[in-house]
Length: 464
Image (cartoon, rainbow, N blue to C red):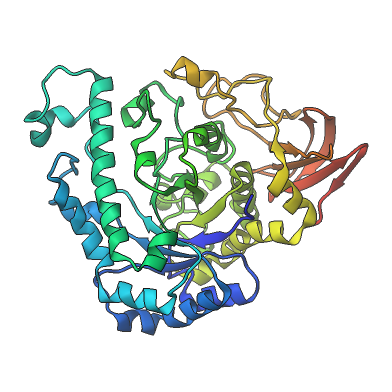
């Protein structure tokens, strides 16, 4: 298994100069380049991208070209995109973003990359299966009265056809060296993490009998959401949390095509708010930290570290942070350092590296995943829950706002030893953790999280 890398959505927080500094200091980084079809070569040179690309070329660093939603250019304001418009129109977004002098310059600066990720924001409003009966282009092609399964399948095939046209056109415009190593990935181009959380989740799902999400049939990978959204009541210490939702990704990954790229986009739910602003009720709708503080809690860099480290290790994948495009970097510096530390320590520690590469994630067979509303029976049979039992865990899960004081997961190796990771989002606590195949261990779990290596009767905290 490939060791983890860190990446970012923004070249304002991770400027080209900052990225060069991180790479030269040994940070495992996927370089980030904002792809602006309306910018010229001078813009990229003035921003410092030439130096970054030269360094990436010398060290064979993977790169990401981050862009907005390509297909947005096919919309009029206020519309939702339909896959039933003429096929050829889906070549236009590729032409707009790839057939440019800037793209030719970028390729010339790094002519033989080892990996290129074209990351699309993928948030263009798209027509859903329950809305296509009102789509004029759909109505003229298909009869009325089709079941929801039939409409989902029609929509699935139409979207896959159109996006494959767009990506084929984009690939044809790249040099052979770039085309061979390029992957077109999308934000949330995967199945839904909230599957089963409430009865109505299926309205927003793209699943059909043959495929869990149509995006798996056209994108080459995804940046899957791992957010404590500020617009809902989820928390990093509840049943309704990214930690629990990400467990849905694990069984859904079985449906991924070979070589499908998977990373997590992480965000702590703070928008326009900065840590030095403290609590103010005017920010409650835009700041998850203020929501925590209203609950009598604190929000620290260590709390962020514990949360993203849990999710990265659960999925064992790269992590990419999102923050608003015009964020002031210095005001998030401590949190940014935690983002960098989380994957970097895997590269530094021989114990962590061993379990990252060969460890087997331990399921919790005593409980079912708490998201089980209106789910197909075959999905309910999947192993979906990996949170280890602790002495502080509720005896039963009764509601989405149930508090989980400690989030713990574990792995075993071929050599018979174990690794446990645990973090306590609100405050440090002492607890026992039940490790299936071994027994109980008693540990003090910090907010930032900790690792414990178990060999025989020895339980040692990993110094990282």
